[in-house]
Image (cartoon, rainbow, N blue to C red; front, side, top):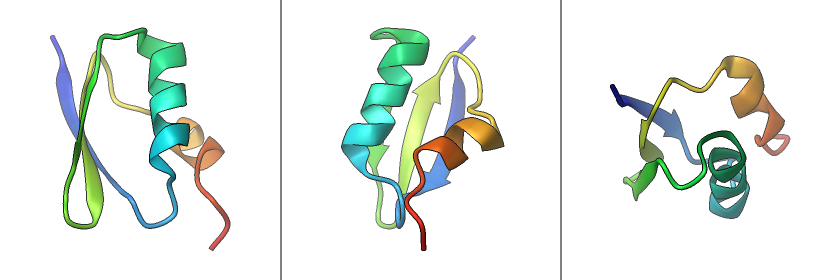
Length: 58
C-alpha cells in the first residue's frame, strides 16, 4: 500500500528527487510540489540516508 511522505524542498533539486524515485520505484510514484516541500506518494518511505544523498549542502 502506498505511503505519503513530505520532505522539505529547500535543499533538494526536483530533478535529483525524480531520478532517485525512478531508480527506486520505476514509475510507481507521484510528486506534488507544495509551498516549501515535496509531497510524495511512494511504495515505502525514503530513508534518511536516501534523502541525504540528494540533499545539497546548506
